[in-house]
Length: 168
Image 1: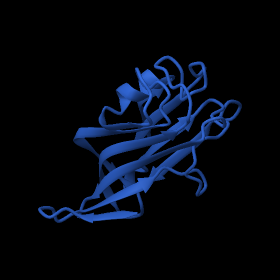
Image 2: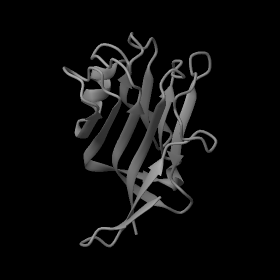
Image 3: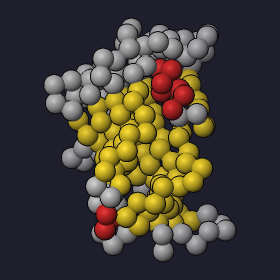
Image 4: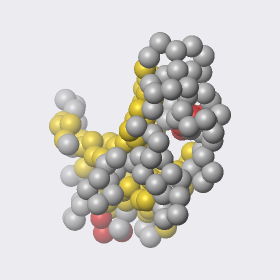
């Protein structure tokens, strides 16, 4: 999904889903075998990773110390990772809503009319913007991935995208 050009820039921006075999829904069971959702840099391409976006829809009580409206924090969680020149660099492990909220501080939006910290909210959307974008190259095998390490099948919807700028 291309978001086109910004008026004062000559490089195209793209908003791409992290996927696992073409599936972008991350509400899966990764408790026995981790599920990896990723986006690799295409052939002969270099990206500047500008940001990561996450969306979770899970109606119910989403208090700070649980994940979604599970009623408990995750055991193993999910990890946001950038693979650069063959090495994995973990950006963040997410175990509960506070981790989610603190990891995606920009453009936060929660929906419904609940009270308190995410109480009775139906969804969460947030962005992690990189003040200094990360350079990722296909020639180095670079990619962005989220590793699901718990059973998230009770979550109604969980998706992530990356915003990249192609280096021309």
